Length: 194
Image 1 (cartoon, rainbow, N blue to C red):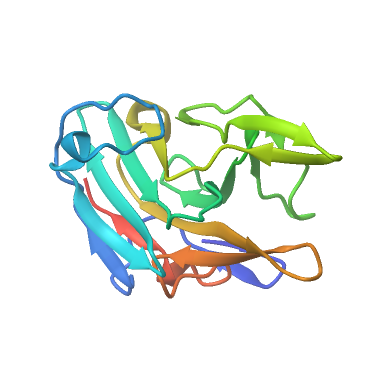
Image 2 (image 1 turned 90 degrees about the vertical axis):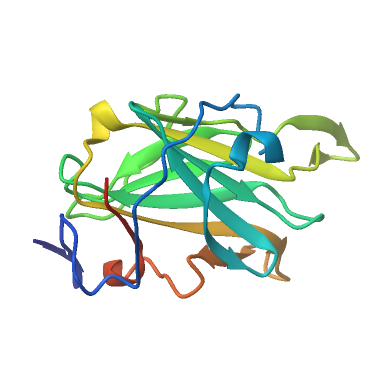
């Protein structure tokens, strides 16, 4: 168990998990960010919240996830991961940039962009810059793949904060997957049993 700034993180499966699943075995996917139905029929629908869905499946070597968005979705998210090999929280970020950072006693460091190790997701695609505003192509889905040899197959816990709308103060509103998960309560994260 690790306690950092009042937050407690426990590596390994907990019996008190809000959601514990065994990802079904499935066929490989093309990481194109489309989450085509034909590629995900063999996956488990794990969570749904305000039009956002999370599907999960595995192959011998990879854990694959598909996050779909409502029509006006931004296609960006923060993911949080713990495993028996990843003993401190790893924050994965997907937007126009892909990167990660690991929690430390002093808090979150800056992201390491494009240096993702053991995982990947397709980035949000740039469209244009008009009138000083960067515009991106619509993003109906995002696909993420984790290398089980890198992260191991035991003690998995994961959650996502999916960005979907800009607030008046310039920040973004988020939707949690699973619906009642939050970063401060690891027991609310999805627990995966391989």
